[in-house]
Image 1 (cartoon, rainbow, N blue to C red):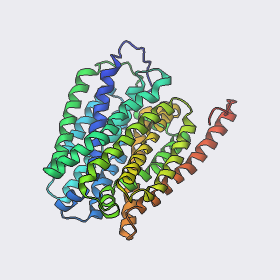
Image 2: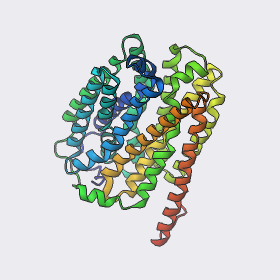
Image 3: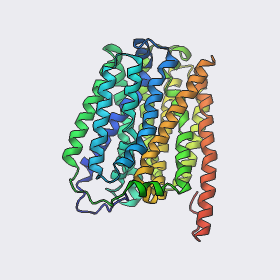
Image 4: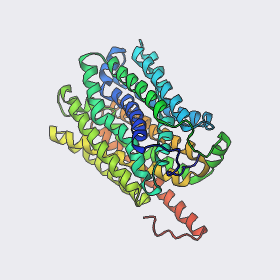
Length: 405
């Protein structure tokens, strides 16, 4: 599918449609991140160690990686309204299953199932949002949808963590389920039945992936975004073992992290509408700097809160990469957009795996950040290849390359 004309009469008021998309992103963000704050409680309830409990995070990410291309291809001929309805309904089912899981094995499976529609929903939602506005505002439109994801960390995640600590962790997944149901109803009501879209097909989408620029962009996301997850996956033991604080501080730390995500997301959306390649490079460099400095910040409450905030700003990378894929994807718009979220969740799994390795080696908890800094550094290497490829392609087509950086 291509990005359709925002002036089409089939497109209704932008605000309510973006709200519906952002609400779905909010529910997805809540499901993805709440397990990180509740990992000790959930692991204890399921009678597994903290390292083994990290499977509840990594298998969700694995579901995203597998589900994004699978669902985008299998629904390629459907309208975006029908795609979004299918994805959010499947997500609802996975979270109800997580809420009812009675063993670690059952919860791992439920988390995997919950992750399957994650990337497909967010990818199609980003395309739908971009189609509602002018080309020079696509980054901000995508940022507004992803604002739901960041607000989940800022407001929903601390609230759900408090709820899970004082009642039971299952209540957090009950909240996600209710939000998913509400979003399904909104999408059904608000989205037009006949949206003017260029029809795609699985074969067209697959053929479009022959473009190496797509894979380089996805590589930046899969590797360069992982450092944040190496830290936030283990934020509770960092809080208690490294900062020597009570878990009562956890919602405050998560709020600081979420605030960083919100501001980073908004900044990333604005940057994406300007110098997109320069934006990607600067955000990767910023990630390396923040992760390197994080271990020096956790010796005090104020330092830990600042560190959590700065780690959250790494989400600025999301919108520029999403818009970059829209620029280079050609006929693989839907598949590339959803694969971007597969790539982000490869980063999630990679970061959680790296953090688990640091913990198992007996290193200080804060070293999850130090080792995590290697990932955005590797992302910068991939970026260098992407930039060289872009310059070479522009020279071949006699287009100037001076506006890239």
